[in-house]
Image (tube, rainbow over all chains, first blue to last red; front, side, top):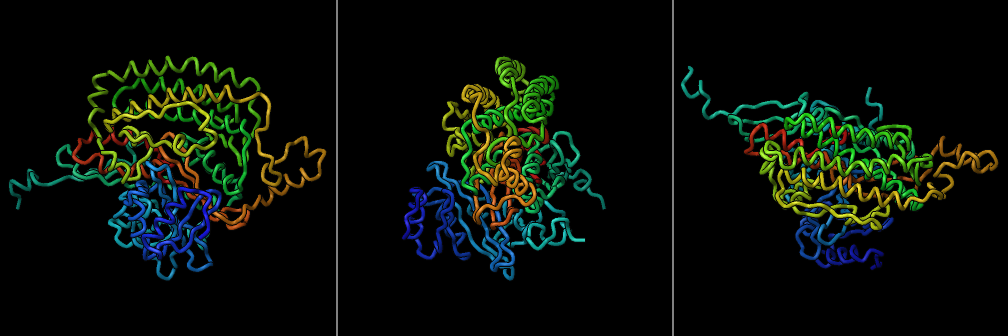
Length: 159
Length: 398
């Protein structure tokens, strides 16, 4: 296994691997940030592990966002930025979602604060979160058609 | 048929719309309140009235052009938004910014924090019925805006922090107004405190109102003064220093009561700490030295060079026509804005325009905790809670 420059992130990756070898499908290190690519099915379990394991303690969900890699398939990449306040660490969990089946497990049961972050992604990208308690549009009006942050949605809007 | 029970409505709750045009919702926030008499049974915030699609617009601009959009996200903290966006793009490029520029950035961002807290203090006092504090706060804020105008030519939408450094050399004689401000300000903060801190009405309206435990706040991803008022010293400037904050000596004020009053106390203490940082930054800024990174093709060349060097002219032309293209990759940077953790995520696909720009705006995420905070409280306390979360609707809706 490749050695990561960030010793804290190295520990997280090893810890997750020893817990479930399938949970870490890829580790990306870029500009000092560590991103762990997680299979979609294991996202919630991995997040739960990251939050609750006494060696990891990523108690704060800092951010959740989505990147549309259109026309590459699976085109959506979900990024969850986690912070461990006590360990002074940051890590990013990433998973891919396809446009044919844009459903992923909600992380609201793990961090209640994921509620609005996921609603925003649902609103702007049209990704469904299974197990979300209140999946409605948040920024756009309820009757809005389309998902404006998708790359195939024109910036000036649909005419 | 009307019975006594339906006529009196003894077991019924009432739904009240607060906002979107309500002075104490600080813009266009709408909160649906379910009321039992004057007590809040549940609250549902409804946002999006100020959504302008800034993140989408960024995808259609070059990296440098998008800076002007970042100003407009949180209009009480434009320099902070410039900073987080530029730090993210610089991280993506692997660009090192000269120390002198970093210190100027720190100084301005801390002045911005003071000005933002002043607006908060003034408007919050107004919500609570104390009119005069607003006038005093805006008097001091004006001095800060004058400093910004001196630096950038703009009072609010400065766009002064640019990718690789600063837009302009600090103006001649900039130290004078900053020194004057630093001399004047501590006594002025004492003045606000004399008006409010021991004021019986102020304490009565804020103490014990809007309590949330630190665990609840972290679970709801709340950051900033709200979390620090609950005893969690989470501050990106200390925990994950950026822009040379590790060289500055300052404290992270915390309280443990986690009510509206504690949030007020934390913010006032933060104004005093920011003054210390401004003082230190001013001493660190040298009169000579670079304010831009040496990165041809990314940072626009000096005007003088363009007259004598052909490469400089070519770079200038290329930067402003097609922009520059960072290598494919992603970068996430978080800074401490006056309202909490302000994050910026930038993804590049190797083209001159960003593939995705996302702002983790603290107002948006902190507002999520409002329903928990106001449950069981009075309508008047809801106003106090909205106030102490310190939302800026431009940032909530983006």
